[in-house]
Image 1: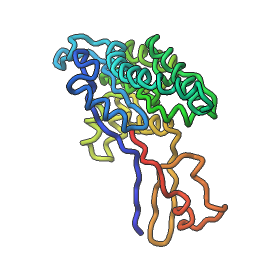
Image 2: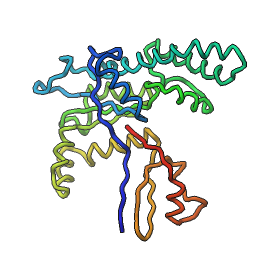
Image 3: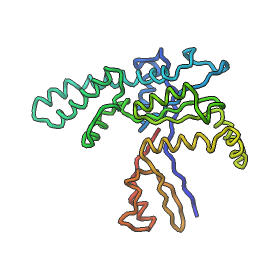
Image 4: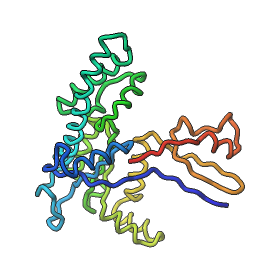
Length: 265
């Protein structure tokens, strides 16, 4: 029997430094990369190490977050302001859809001008589709990944707790991991990993927690189908993880699951 795994697509992009704000140079490429994803996993440095320099010469995770967030808000501000005139002209007529869109645009503009991301816009369920059509960068769900040193992997530290508090205020997700521990786990034989994790005060790799947090952020589950020739895992939303017509035939299940969205972090 063939076993086919499935996974969300994780794309790595280096964030712009403070000197690259306002869409210049690498900024345009960075913004283009962000537009293509469904959620943003923001890896934030939360450890001190004189051997690992920081581009700005300081370790301030909230400032790092705000550097990237500012870049995204500036792009959203420009995008929204360029739409207002055309929407106002249509809204003065009998175009109901333009009136609804203009209302969302103005609510998003008010937040962004106040230094807050568009994902904090309060909206009704029936407004979700129109809001998504705006394509705002700061409307994307965010997962903050706090990269700490080995000693703080199990409990976090003062810096990671700052990020956790910000995530709580925004309704975002947050995970604490140690990239150094993860790199060491990756080269260990499988039979030695559990003992190594236990010595670090951990019950599982940080990567496992990161994956679960990412799936939770996008409201995804893994749905399994099985047949005589193939067992397959599918990444889907819970709403779609149901047998077609209540049947158990994996071929009918597969037909229901296609086409699926390519979920990217």
